[in-house]
Image (cartoon, rainbow, N blue to C red; front, side, top):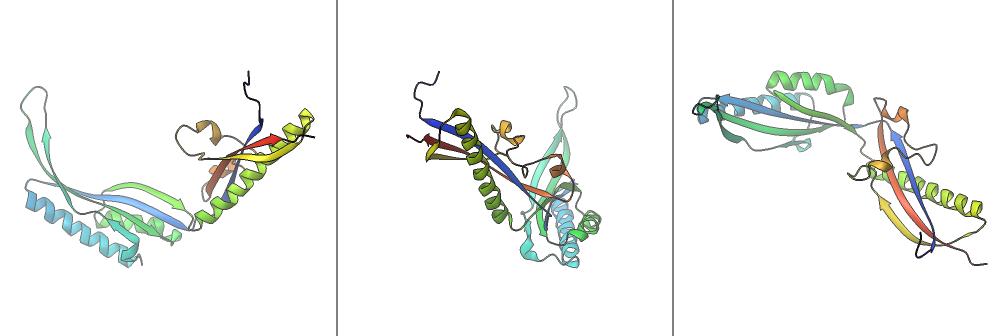
Length: 213
């Protein structure tokens, strides 16, 4: 039961598809040695080799985000026996951006050869993501209004003033019900999952009053 009827609410979603023009590579250098100085030395040498490999591929230092060397002590706990010293682990994490998409595979091969022994992810993106998000939001608003007009016409009434706009993040945890929603022909489809495309989505809920004739 609707205790306070006030108008009509409609949800709209849309997606814009684009070819990626940016790649982000996340990886780590991890070295385990019996002494702390040896662990630092091994990791530092790998960091220098990785930096050299990145420069050889034309990746500027400004596009490389690297953490400081981190040192941890590792112990083994065999069964119920006393713990056993394993060694000192030294690691450095990197995040690299590049616009040379055709060079991704050779870059990864050379980074691993240079000493990167943990590749955490390779993510493709678009530089003009904010512009694409704006287009998706415009389409989402149009989809929501079209749906509201359809409901009003079917009920034999007219839409009044727009009273409420609620932005919805379709990727946010808790909004899973929105992700498969298709409001327009441009919204996500199975083809959006095809390799080589980045999908930028937006969603909105609009609330309208009903016109008083």
